Length: 193
Length: 211
Image (cartoon, rainbow over all chains, first blue to last red):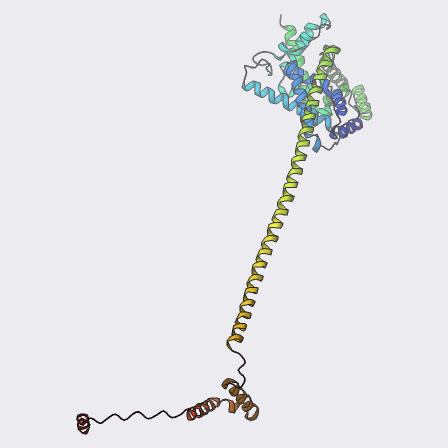
C-alpha cells in the first residue's frame, strides 16, 4: 500500500476511526500472519501474536508520528513478540509449540501448518517443499529471520534492515549466507538415501 | 546507497529492489566478467529456491482467511471500545478532580476570609472596649471631680500660670516655695488650739517634781 495512503489511514486511526483500523488490518495482517505462522508453527498462536501486534499499535499510535517507517515498526513489534515467545517456550519447553534452530529437538518444519493446511498443494512438490522447510528451520535464528521476512512477509531487504535495525549490507550478507546454507542442507538431504 | 559487493547486488537484483542505474551497471558487469555471471546465476537459483516455498496465501482458502481476519479485527474493536471507555472515565475523573480542586480552593478562600474577618472583629471589639474604658474613666473622672472653680487647685493653677506669665519659668521653679507659703498661710488661718486644762497639783507629784 502506498505510504501516503498508510499515513492517511494512520491519521484516521489516531482519531479512533474503526473502519480505518479495519483497512489497516486488511493491509498488513496476511503478511504479518504469514511470518508469524512460519515462525511459531502454530496457527492459533500466530493469530494471537498478530492481534497482539495490532493491539500494541492501538496503544502506542497516539504518540506516533509517521515518517514512512510504520511498516518497519509494525514488523519489529511482531518480530520481538515472536522472539519473546520463543524465549518463553525455551524456558518452559513443555509447551506444545517449540521454536528452535532445528539443531536439536524437534524440527520446526515438523509442525509447519503448510503441510496440513493446504490440500491443493501439488503432490510432486510436497517432498521438496518439506525438505526446504527443514532446511530453513535448521538455519540460525538471525539468518532464518531475514529469509522469512523476505519471503513470508514479502518485505524488501531495505525494509528488513529498518525492521531489524541493522545496515542493509548486513541483511544482504545474512540472506546470502542463509541461502547458501539452505542449498547445502538440500544437497546433503539429496545425497542421503 | 552504500557500496555493496557483487553477491549482495545480485541478491537485490533478483529480489527486484535494484534501481535502474544500478541494474544497468550490474548487467554491464555481468556481461563483462563470466565469473560475475556465474555468481548472478547462483544467487538467482538460490533465491528461486526460497521463493518456491509456499506462502500463507498459497495455503489458506478464502474462508480461513476471512475468519482469521475477522478475529483479528474483532480483537482490535474490543480494544478500541475499552480504550474509548477508559478515555471517557479518565476524562470524567479529570473533571471530577478539577471540580474538587476548585471547591477546595473556594473553601480555603472562604476559610481564610472568615478567619481574617474574625480577627478584625476581635481587634475592633478590643479597640472598642479600650475606647469604652477610656470614656468610662473620663466619665468617672468628671463624675468624681465636679466643677471645682474657685478651689485651691484652680487658684493654684491660676496663680502658677499668672506667675509664669509675669515672671517666667525661673520663678515657676520656686513654686515649691509658693506652696510652702500658701501652706504657712493656711496654717496661720487655722485657729490656735485651746490650751490643755490645768490638772490639780498633787503634793506628792509636786514634791517629786521638785526632786
